[in-house]
Amino acid sequence: MDNVRSILIAIGLVVALVGVILLLGIAEPPQHAVIATERLDVAVLGFANSSAWRGAAGTLQARIETELVNTPGITVFSRSRLDRLLTEQMLGEVGICDPATAARIGSLTGVNKLITGTVYAIDTSKEPTTVCVEWKNGECVSLVPANRYRLQLLAQIQIVDTRSGQIEQACDCEGEDTVTIKEGSSFGGYEGLLVAAATDIASDVSSLLISSYTRELHYGLYRSVTRKREGYVGEDETSRFSRSDLNTLLIVHFNRVRSGDLFELHWIDSSGKTVETARDTVTNGQWCLYELSLTDLQIGRFTVQGYLDGIKAFERAFVINP
Image 1 (cartoon, rainbow, N blue to C red):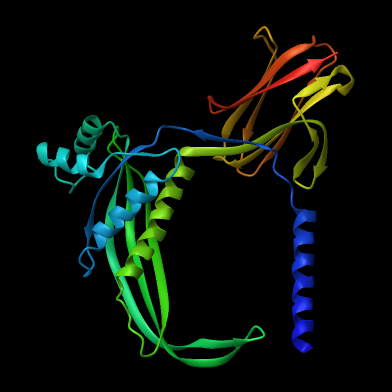
Image 2: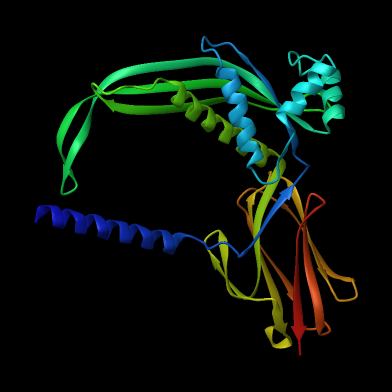
């Protein structure tokens, strides 16, 4: 009975928490835009290895390349072609931050970003613990001795621009993985943990590229809008309006921008004429509400265009009916 009561209490707490989140949260506008501030054509170069673990640099390089290949918006130059070009041109991968060398590789490959770095430490450990081998009613009833194996991979990652040869981004990254094995069972070795730890770092590199060279926002057109704390909640999202609506309302939520980015909005009629504009300096997480009065406008097709630092972020068409 006590177990049933505990489960019911836990379910009640989860339901209450979900309700609070729904009450306090602000729903995103339905339209989503990711703006590339520059193209991301990258090459993953060899990594130096300052650790005592042979093969660690190659593992990290391979995991980063795989992660970037599978990341939308990033084009990765073939590793085999890159190695062949470097050999043919007698270009080593040491000293890649030299502007002339970076520019040479950029011209040979067409990439604008080079990813490289150093594996500078790998720490492994084994510590005694216990593992549950039998459960009843959601509770462990049998523990046995076990060992927890842990591997931590530490690396410095650099993103080099081929045009300037300068390091644009750098980070000290950490990846980690653990496995717990019952005492007496065979441990396959740390290689699998190394791959998982390198995959963690690869994910960080992908996120660093996306956050550094792209912006993100959500937007939507509505007939009515209400204020909710620091944001706005739209009602009746639509692309069809009538004169009786009086205004077309646009909500924009800047999910990921740089503080000080300039946002420009253009309302354009069917002839291509701009009927109204707006400009704002925006910050990360900011909500903005824009409106276009329909009173003096002709019926027909219109568009609203948003630009972030001069780059088109979105274009949304809508119609004004009688």
